[in-house]
Image (cartoon, rainbow, N blue to C red; front, side):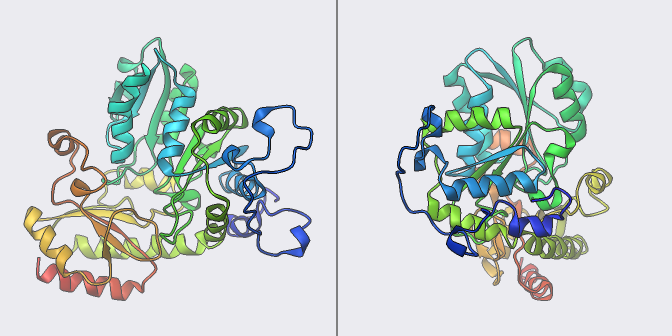
Amino acid sequence: MKSSERLETKVIHAGDPHPRILGAVSMPVFQSSIYEYSGETSYHDLKYIRLNNTPNHQALHRKLASLEGAEDALVTGSGMAAISTALLSVLSSGDHLLAQDCLYGGTHEFIARDLKSFGVSFDFIDADKPASWGKKIRRNTKAIYVETMTNPLLQVGDLETVARFAKKRGLVSLIDNTSASPVNFRPAGRGFDLSLHSATKYLNGHSDIVAGAVIGSAALVERVTHRLNHLGGSLDPHACFLLDRGIKTLAVRMERQNRTALDLARFLERQPKVARVNYPGLESHPRHHRARELFDGFGGLLSFELKGGLKAAERFMRRVRLPAVAPSFGGVESLVTRPATTSHSGMPVKERRKLGIADGLVLVSVGLEAAEDVLADFEQALAAA
């Protein structure tokens, strides 16, 4: 796939085998766990599902690397498999990590609770205050971890400074790019070493598989691959097929979700019952100008709080009709959830509230429904809130 071709073309054609396998236009599913030995000299080169190197895996790796303009990529059994394996590949016992303070709940818990058992220490940082980062760096600091647009507050850190800070100090820079997708942001071009995804979300886009991805430099992706081969977080070939198929519509889905989410955010901002709307596409967002410089779109995820607090949020969620009340995001159907009861329920209440994640915060994942229908549904639900 030529690097000059646009992303809308790459999502469809990048990674496809040439010549096509027996003329199949769609990538076939290779539902075989084992392959004949053909002279491989390394364990990691043996063809085996757990080693993530079947034809289905390889096609996805090529496609994902092409989408973000990176050297290599790897798919995993879940987003958390991608995140945890990547961190365990660049950190060892005695190392230290800098991580953004407001992260997806699963990532926050892995860093704050699980890394200790591996002998890894950490400090949380405000990704919007570069002057404070140097005070927390240590001799044994090896990596820095951030999110493109944070879940669930949609903060936009000083991402370009993060990448420069890491390179200057010899740190590995990791960024969770799930909320933006390669359509809106491509980390390799901004200097990041590794981009991570819950492919369950926008990359697949149909709420029917769980998968993850690691994208970045060939050397680092190889390290993550070797660690994953031992940990076993592989992706099944049929899930690979579904993910490959889902990615083909990523550009058109993301374009629609970008547009509808902005319409909804502007609508909510005008409502007298709404206290706060978090969406980088809004001119009122504290880092709107930064988001405009960094992103090609602002994504399909937003959050808001009602003036009536938790009880009003619960009334709204009972009344809303189109969105399912369910965790996750990035699918064709709209979803609403309260992070305090789902993605961030494992975080101590005081810690969660300190970060600004209120009990009544509502997270919205905009789907592909007509924008007019979504707005009308939210209007009638707000009337009862």
